[in-house]
Image (cartoon, each protein chain N blue to C red):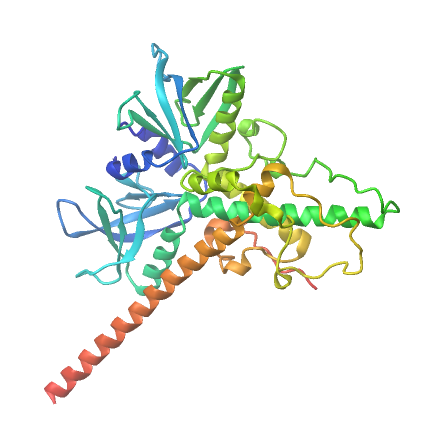
Length: 277
Length: 155
């Protein structure tokens, strides 16, 4: 399969944001010793080269479909990127110290496309809920309580944050609903069961939002959820929260594991002291 | 340049909501239009010969511009020095629009910009940083800009 390397190289060297960079040790495939490499994480791509600023890019690891795990290794502060499946490989990496190990694991766990996709959808839902609430409160304050106005269609969408290349967006309207790839099946299922969308679009637990204008009486109940939004919104916030919970759990388990190992090491040292005594 | 090819091929087999047979033409002079099964998975565009398991190639959809060439054709131009342009011929105007939208929205950088927009706006409207509840406010990935930080509003 042809990878169009020049596109990758350009992405690595251009001024798009770097999510993390630093030295890590990478276990070779043929030469099984650990080699020190400069790693650059951008989005869901992990680039590596000999030194920072090197023109020659040694390689890239596409971080989709892998698990990030602690691993057994002669190297300290090691962790691995594991793909499960016939013939798929594991990359073994090691950091200089525990803080770096922790930071890299956290960054790599959350580098995948789906994570960002779910987070954006979650925030988008919150944003639309907030602007909905704003408009309905504005309407309620006007003297037309019996005339529920349909909310205005011209939301200031992300197009107001245009990059230099204005043709990035093909239209002036806010981007249409995003359908993430890997969770496409889930979305399809939701599309088949509209009965789950009886909840109003902007329900949320009180602890997250400050109470505002508590004395305003809503006109005529919550606005009916928009067509396609209603289907997508139900349950998605739970999906990201669950994803976040899962990652948090993984990180906590890794930390507990380290602490256990440290305690084991301390016990060994004490035994040695007794032996030598 | 090395990369995890097998794992990327494995990714190309994931379910995708945007997959269709399109006419595809490469950037080089003399490249002709060929029918390819084009499949969008995360921020990669894979293209296969019909009935083949492994893709012919994979295009990373970052640092590129998607443009409408005519009613049924769109192009992807990569913003490196060569400004390589790939052409895709669709069967309908609607299909062409759907592909254009999907490719634009698949970009990681596009999603990041949206995230920053929503984060900033929600903070402006509510005085709260929506990432705080997830404990990820300080992640480099989500910063509003390299210098700016979201300051909590005075209550």
